[in-house]
Image 1 (cartoon, rainbow, N blue to C red):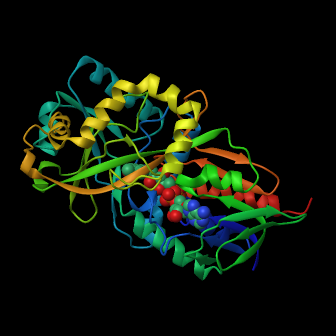
Image 2: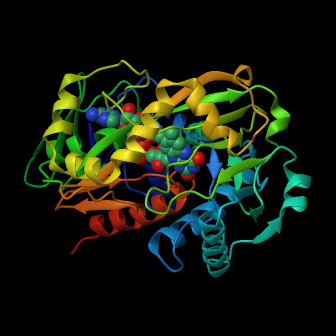
Image 3: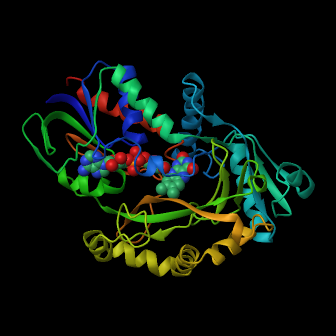
Length: 397
Ligand SMILES: Cc1cc2nc3c(=O)[nH]c(=O)nc-3n(C[C@H](O)[C@H](O)[C@H](O)COP(=O)(O)OP(=O)(O)OC[C@H]3O[C@@H](n4cnc5c(N)ncnc54)[C@H](O)[C@@H]3O)c2cc1C
């Protein structure tokens, strides 16, 4: 099979790019996904939050991509009648450190053009009657989305544009010929002029397969959720002020588009890249993680946080204690274990966690080596940028 661009990975980033390519050019695009359906991994197992852009430093790439991505996602959901709601969120705080963080987020939010305001406890209680916190940042531009529906729609729209989306197509071998890259799955050989690697949790391995030498490793962090049974405890989204060094940490309560309320996630090192259960072990993944110097540097810097996260994963009571800082009325019997997700976090050899999009390019390959949160929110903007990059590559010199 021949194509101009082969995309490895049928998650939200791969399919958003396929669709954006189809909107802009006539090139032949092929998406290869190893699972039997799309959105099986990160894109189908996240918090479902449409991030507003308050968390990112003004004028940073991350802020711009999140803001543009959010607007594109809102339009996409409206046009395609997909479940989404701009319900707003509160980020709560009580201690002086938390209140200082709320003010920083408020400044960043305003500078990024996000609708937000600091509210006092009485106003907070009118919105979220069970939330703790002396003050809160009310972010009106945050919302909830059913990302798996978005991915499925991106798939069908791409197919209407003429893109082949092949599931059950695990890419296990690749080599370069003079004008092409040859990709092999169990039952197909693909000859592509360029390859986009959007393999999420396996992006570093696929980059190596494609002849690149990534300077990061993807470390998997499992996030576990509980369902909060009395739904009235959280009407919209309730978040803690959090820690700037590890912005993806912090148990929050999220109303999903189907009305359920999920609490979590924790973030514990997973023993397998797709280890959704605590004891799913893949020795090759563990070995790779252990042999990466970045793992040890990271562990040295964040061992206290790591222990807290592991406790939270092992003990429902501990998870409850953390959640009660947000919603004090919750009891142990109010929590029912729900699904989990595994985050792909790219880490450098010196232990630095990469926070924004991280892309490595070579002659015929573009690898997305880090697309962590808020990349589901930002996916259509990310897809736009990747599509432009790939179209430039197809232009004759
Ligand atoms: C617990 C959790 C909570 C999150 N919450 C949010 C949130 O609320 N809002 C937000 O904006 N973002 C959130 N994120 C981040 C967001 O989900 C991700 O940034 C986004 O889904 C990444 O999409 P992706 O397409 O890069 O990866 P994925 O969805 O993981 O897709 C990668 C695909 O590549 C495929 N693949 C891998 N190897 C191969 C191979 N060899 N051959 C063929 N196919 C292959 C996989 O099967 C997979 O389908 C969260 C993430 C997690 C894990």
